[in-house]
Length: 231
Ligand code: APR
Image (cartoon, rainbow, N blue to C red):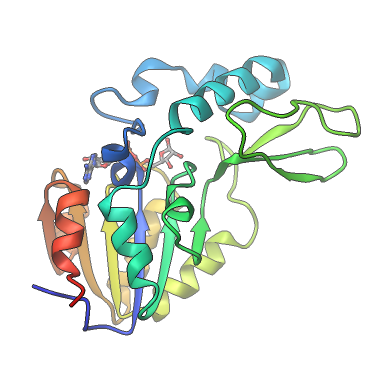
């Protein structure tokens, strides 16, 4: 099956699984981040308020795990497609690999490891270095990773943006997500309720698999390029 010449507007809804073959750790399952680290003390607002330095050190460590990771054929297939049609990425990932692959239309539902913000003066900072250039804002306060942590609400506007893209696409492909974190996990339902053809790509069945028109089980880096062959 070659979808490259079908469909006009495609939304790729991606989770940690699309970056697994780039050696970015997933969150759950074997080797998952939350199997090893306690998000309650390292990746939530309460932990940051209690000990900003420890939280920043953990996120600097997460940046070091991702810093040398390269996009894989799944990311590259999506960015290549963007040159031929309306292609949008709605990602739960914070690794920046879609952008590294050249994708320009990326909605980052959960923020980014490569951005920081100051909740006192409102500064937003992009910092692509391995180590933070600075953990303190020019105003003197601690900078906070611009990431949507557990118990946070999404950054304003991203959910609405994702919702409208999914509502109007004619192909919706979910790649490498366990669908275990809301409100992101509710986004595929918008595709199911709309006109889009819905495809799931994962290593294994998820609770939403029966809702998709098609499901492919296997490695995203192998399967996605096989679904979009460019003549
Ligand atoms: N190809 C396809 N799917 C894969 C691959 C692969 N190579 N490797 C893993 N997967 C699948 C797993 O089967 C699993 O369903 O990717 C999914 C990864 O699930 P999670 O680790 O739960 O990641 P994700 O769904 O993105 O988590 C959602 O949870 O912790 C929060 O904010 C965090 O954005 C994250 C959210």
